[in-house]
Length: 357
Image (cartoon, rainbow, N blue to C red; front, side):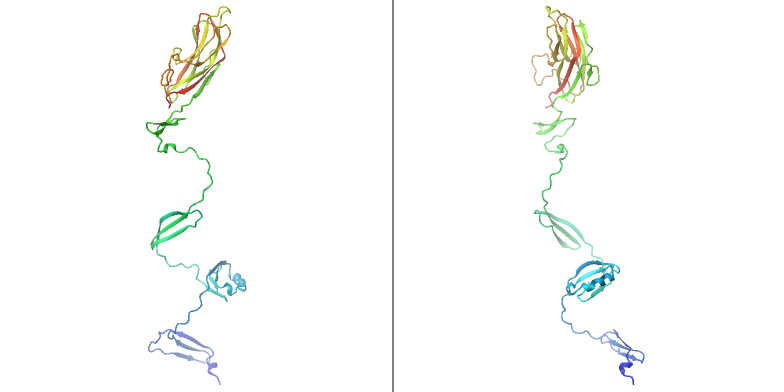
């Protein structure tokens, strides 16, 4: 004799959702010696249960290679590790240790999330906080229009940097910009109460002739000569390039000369002169000779042949932008013939600006 339990040993029980309390819905039961089925309708909701314990905090541990690596880790986990979670790289699943086993979330990674609401963030107030303080950020407003306000800590004093190049003096408020030339310097203009570019006020040069060699590879002093009978003799020309300011030559150097006289007849003196432009131009240097039959050096010194000069005088001045030629000549005072020697002859010219300040 078969029992009911044996008769329905393989009965399948399944629930159906026809709506709680729906009219005309009946339960169905079917059974045979080989199988059976029992359909149960959804019941009415029960009473709400008591609140359970708080969930374990989620503790992200990173990635783990595959299921084998996770299985090797499992014996080491206890209730104290509850809440730890890993991503299995081989499957992309998220596993969560609940204290007794793993809960797996197969679709935790890779699925696209819901579209977020577009939002615009603009920078608001940016203040500076004390040195060493934390960066503070606050967001105000209502989405989608938000404002980010920042308080940035002040940085410490940095190391001294490398020395920079010349500063932009032309941008200074007390500098009156204007045409600039090489070596111009700023000078104070009391009338304008500003600094202005002026030509370099120091000496320019030198330009020289030493014996037969000139600074510009031009002719030097003429060859030595004895028994000169002419009252004057031009022996050298020194070329000076144009300058950016009015200037006056400052001359040094000298020429060796000798009068042809007996020891008891000394009456002739040979001077050396430097003149601008020609042998009759403005005198700017003089080398006074000696009344002696010996060879002497007529040494050049600045000399302008006038009784008085002032800073505003135009005597001996070469205008700006104009090149000049200085003529060196010998002048006899007396009647005897004389000799001139190129050896040791020299002239050195510096240009001293006038009115540059």
